[in-house]
Length: 403
Ligand code: CTP
Image (cartoon, rainbow, N blue to C red; front, side):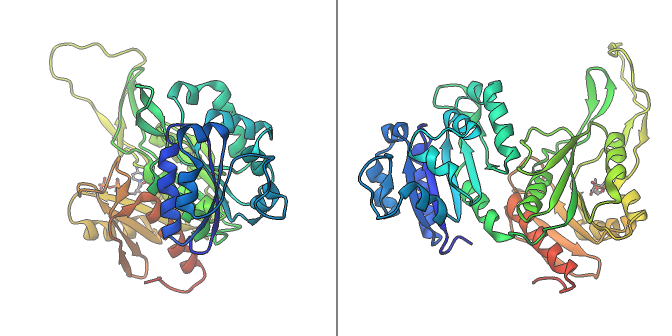
């Protein structure tokens, strides 16, 4: 995917800068040419010589040093990039980009770029959650700047939280996605549902499930990368909304049912990745239920089956369901596809290692209406999502299933 591509890598001043050396190495192994631009602070963490050695190209740090080529470097670098990655991206560079400040080499190049930009933020989690940083993220997402991470975990400052730069392999996979399916879903309206619905019992409790929303968010991202106009109807999920995706937030299955049906008619493709609760408590207590010391029996009533309703009312839409199974995977999957009248079903065994809820990887099979089936090996949820985009694009062009 990255063979022959010119990637401009901006490195800003965070301890995660050392991981960017691995990014350059991986990019070069994939056949990409990498131009590295470092801010002054970045050079305090890693020497330009390290990046020069690994990229086998000059490293740019200062605005007014003797140019390495005959042309105006910040403009030519910006123009020749197929994609720009800033990793790590500090709170400072986010703020400068949001405001259009160009007071050093990197921020000046970033103002002149037309290629897609991917930022991998890394900072202390309090800085990440500061309203100023969050506002800047919002502004940049509105300009279709892409983001990956930050991830949760232990931080160099000794605290735990979100703020760690994503791992180099994940960053590279995202970059590949920017090229892989470029434009193949242009003009398509796509609705994706994600997350696990919550069915309240009282003001403080709910019945929920283990869905993290990762698969559905990856699907929304993959379609957006491929140029579709994506609406994500999301049940609670602790994930950031992918660039260019419109989100409608819901809590319960009934909320999701209402929101999805409202916009179903105008969609070309609908992907139901959400884990929808089949039942909800019959009574929603207005006050917190008090414990009584004896066993408690809850009465549950069925929720609407959203996918089945969509299948029933299907006209021009291409409808995709997911099936989370723990046994008889394919048999149950085929049964669901038929019963819910979907064009495609993604089945997975949620008990297999490397698959199911909360993991970054999954092991799935695609089942198609014409009886064809495609088994995928273990891969990241992002890779699976991109494969889905490709399969659906092929089916829509009438070319049959890609093997
Ligand atoms: N689904 C839905 N509405 C529901 C239940 C499920 O739209 N009330 C959708 C899911 O989003 C998924 C598909 O139906 O795309 C299959 O969901 P799954 O939980 O695997 O199956 P169920 O139909 O709920 O059947 P069971 O729980 O008996 O396996």
